Image 1 (cartoon, rainbow, N blue to C red):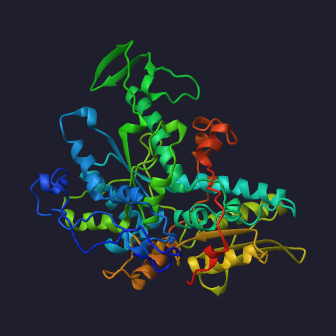
Image 2 (image 1 turned 60 degrees about the vertical axis):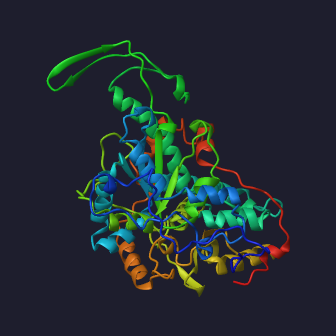
Length: 501
């Protein structure tokens, strides 16, 4: 079968069937085990509609198709139910990280404020047996801050001999996969090397969070751990400390501590689009994680909503966790983007200040050929010194690539998203039963998202702490390893642009 956008003769992508399979008998849902009414009986395997695959390049292999089929609610319940068995060697710490663009969907669905919807979602997940629920906003902080530095460096290095601009964002997995598999070089040379928020969140959970768990469990214990070591399989702890427990004084000495290894964490991402599932499979195995993927499973907002609709479980709202001990998220904030993580706005302000000493408070967008292609400019002494653009959807992406290859593209930076309308319009949420965009719901979500208070990455109280304690410095080798990536460099022919959108 062939996707309407594919350029090759055959397509290996699977279609989503109308078959609504039960959750398998070996992985019953919590509601089934408890004998409650909700049986999650309509949860199907995760399959991708041809129209859902935003990176339409006929590039999902048979092996990847099998792996994608495992990115579903059944795998999620498998881990939940393993945690209820007596064999503790198979137990895992279950962590769910929620993308900010998913929250307006739940707020609209529950008819709640976005903060209350976040608490309702967190409470539901914890009622299932999830241990921690995080917001991925802190991972987007890292992605934006690293992208800011890279743009300033590229701008200063750009010349006729070394054409480092425009810089194209790397946060959207559908766009990145399309660039790698279809466009190839020289387009991938323009991709920002900063990892996406999902990739950074994987490292935060599987590396930084795992380290913090060891410290939390052992209180003020003294750790014998070489600086920079992540040899979780051979961590030795020598400790001598006193703790108060229920009014009794306790002393423990000379104890060996079992650690929380990355493999003992099952990390689930809740995201607005299906391409995040493919991104989880594509991601390499960072050395610090010793062969463990940063994200073990990706569920779309719609899949989670389906579980909630059929769960019929008693839910008590719960605050969203943070990576910093017992601290909780008191309210939801977002980055300064109309429907995205806001790379354009934040990088524009940073570049204006760093390169031209201009303070920009309000970023003004100007729509050009359509509402999904907008530009932002900075003028100084009557001359345009910065010209940024936002290009959403593949029609705009194709026009951008054609002009870029012809040398007629005037922009220094482009925020590129595969979904027309941005991340809020991801195919994993705000869809009608027949698979089309629910425009009324999307407008409601856009209003909810716009009302969320904006917080700039630089204002995060914990970012400097994470750079120093986790990454050993802002520009350290570990920071480059954890926060940056490389891209495939395959050459493609001109036919890759001959697509009728």
